[in-house]
Image (cartoon, rainbow over all chains, first blue to last red; front, side):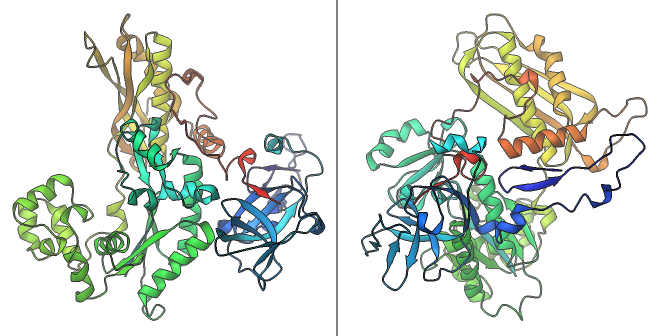
Length: 145
Length: 418
């Protein structure tokens, strides 16, 4: 039995107890063996931030409107990576085409965007995971609107 | 070798991390209650926006230049500070976090590992920038005071690009020569005034004085500073982190208060803030002072202050709140329009040397207090309060220009356009 709390989704193990005083659960000594989603999903906690996808241009690679994105700033960007960039004062999630300096969408409805010297452009990090919430999460409902 | 790494106008820089719209704009951050400007980003500084001025005085100047104004977002700053400190800790095995935005590093036996301190400093800057998007300045010196001086040079003197190193006589004098005495770590306004009267204007001049001579004229702290400026280590971690001797929480009200319940609520809130700060530095309080007044500009000035002694030193918020209950009727006076109130811990003791009393049971409840602090740290200050601190917001902090809590509230995480 566990509960997921907070920003880093630390899994806090809770004693499995028999509920009878004087009768300790045989599982008590295994309480440290919880699974941590942080451990699985976040390799560089200090350099990682969490954001939320908004829009439909990345459907082709499975990033949908409202998905949670885990973004790692410490990785170096490789051609074809899914990145988050500051493009003219806005965080965008795109595929990076380093050879032609373009931002590519994963949907035929959105044309590639060329990055010109006039544009404000910095890579903010590499999207290492995206998470779909198949059931709505009450914590996030406020920001879905 | 010692290092001092600190963020360039930390609060203002932190505001830019998750808000790409304002990355290239002038940004200032206001203090508690949106009173004064406490941080000015480099772009705003170049526009001549002064630090530590009341907001209302420079409001038109800010509007004229389109300066972005933010209230202090402590939740965001605490999170970014931790990340920044963690990234720099990779570069040194002995780190001492001095404040929310600065950290000393002590490099012992690094000589075979670090050949070029300039290069190493830039490595630290690059890593912190890449991983947290916070700009930092790095100073290296052979003593703590010299590392602080180098850090000053790295950020404020021309010719340094965010990193400065004091490793030999030449680099030491080059920096100290250009530094004013008032910019030396540990030299306050009064002492620098007296030094100036004696013709000592620069750090280099102070370094050339005889330490003993300065010690006799001023005090041992200044004597040590002179030694430290000459590369003689006198300070250690323990000395730079002495806990505060007094802790106060006080504020003027947004609106005048005339009823006893509202005054009690405000005082209990101040008491809770004081208790939290006491716990943070592992102290206990023996005596508190509780005070309230109207404005000195009122027709009849009213001020009442009462000192309350605890039978046993405590760090428990409930004990402080009980003390408020006991003194409130002596402080409150019918008809007075209260303008200001506060609570101060005036006699503090170290938790390490507590003297228990045989006849008084120890009623501190560390588990409860830990729980309280943890919940408030996690979900924001004021999430869990004492019942008597109420939820009336007449006296509460004004934070009119608050940015979202990007890293500590799910509802506030940054939106990324796809």
